[in-house]
Amino acid sequence: MRKLGRSTYQYRMKHVNHQIFVLMVLTITIPLLVISAIIYIFSNQAVKNEYQSSSNLILNNLSFNIDQYLQSIEKGTLNAQMDSRLQIALEHWTNSKDNTGNDQSIQYGNTIEHFISSIEMTIKNVDSVQIYAGSRVFYSANFNRADYDFKDFTKEDWYIQTQQKKGGVILFGSHIPFHRTNSKEPVISIARVINKVGSKQPLGVMLIDIRLDSLREILKLSETSKRNFIIIDDKGGITYHSDANADINTSVSLEDNTLRTFLEEDSGSFYAHVADTKSYINFVTSGYSNWKVIQYIAEKEMTKQAAILGKIILTLAILSLGTAILFMYILSERVTKPIILLSRQVKMVGMGKFDVDLSSDRQDEFGVLYQGIRKMVEDLQNYIERSSMAKAQQKVAQFGALKSQINPHFLANVLESIQMKAVINGQRDIGEMVGTVGRLFRIHIQTGKDTVTLKEELEHIRLYVKIQQLRFGDKIQYIERLAPNSETVQVMHFSLQPLIENAIVHGLERRSGPGQLEVSSLRSGNEMLIMIKDNGVGISEEQLKQLRYRLSQPSDTLDEAHIGIKNVHDRILFYFGEQYGLEIDSQLGEGTTISIRLPAN
Image (cartoon, rainbow, N blue to C red; front, top):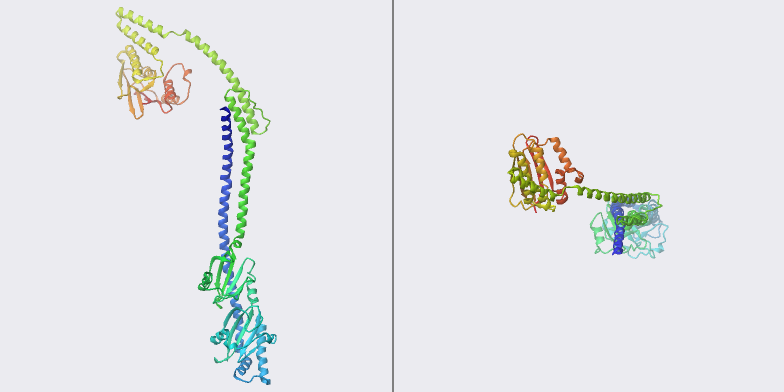
């Protein structure tokens, strides 16, 4: 059983280590984790908001630059409407049926080709410029005519669409150049009908093919490995894609929800999956070309910096957890285990074993603690030895004092003999007084209990008051006002007599005229009040404060010369509890009331 108790004690002490560890985790690691999560969430959202704002600004700038570039090309095509020499040459080719072999035809052809060369020189990244006049197509001298195949271009869709515009510019998204054989490099094209100045008479059709390098140069400052761009035309065809492996000739189906969003809205942003990767997508619509400029980036790339910050804070949290574990180990080795050992030794001292080893070579606070406890144990052992010797001497002295005291039985028998002698001699008053005193002694002899009923205690009081009345005559009037069923309540034996004696000696005896002494009781719930009231001289306010203060202070009544109010109060507190005891109220010249609060059960 002893061994089991020791192991249980060890377990409880180790459990304290666990509590300290849990406390450190709760106060350091978990708050750090919570702070990490909050910081990551807010920084993540802040990065997203910042990126979205910058992305919208970038897209608007890119769309504006693309429009500016396309408008510059359109302005270049307007030169065809203003060049009179070109107008004459085109009119000749459209109106003449025989345009071969003569010098004038060659001159007109050279004029058209010279105009084409000037367009190529003034517009950047032009792949080719063609002018369709009559049944012939004119190119610049730098192009190999063998690379082109013209069968009936007037029936092709692009040509028909251009004719329908009647001089307006029409844009063609990314496509393989019309009529060019074996070409794999896509271009974008601008086409318009060249009308005769001052009329709507068509003289020819100009087609300008532009390499995608032009778009790439516009986008390259913003285009990185993280940001990607797509340009789609108003029909859903992909005009440009950052991914070189993407098939720009394939139009996305209108059933695709993402494309439907692009086509139905002028601008917007949302999250969607691109190549199985969740990405942030935003887009704007070009006001000139009506093309959609789309930008997208993987969400992981967008929040990469926030993720790095989150990992750093998470690492700090893990390090704090490791620190807590290390601290718990150091605490166990340097603090808890020495405390457990010291507590066992103190426990053995408490069991009376003073031969424990309390030596320690530590130079810190634990060393001071061991030295202090060792000194305390030595002083305690010396004190116990001195106290035991003193108590033995006190017992011897008390035994001698008891032997010298008058035997109460002897006094009671003597008083009864005196009473009989007084009655025989006709001194009945003296006999009655002596008989009352004898009965008082009998009560002391017969009762060995700590508590008695109120009824038994009042029998003692009545005898004591009767003796005082025989002494003082009509000066003392005694009254009892008891609540029903209060006589069965237990009170401390000999607790009322000292209070009655104080009321007579210090209150009524000093009064000039007759006085009244009243004992009353009042039951309230589980408590009972016994009031001893006199109309004597009372107590001054200063004396009353001193008396109340004395009742509130602890004292050893065994050291007092007589049993008084303090003795009664302390006995009640000790026996019944702190909520019970005496209360004193008094006014000088009017009297004093002592209330005894007791349990009624």
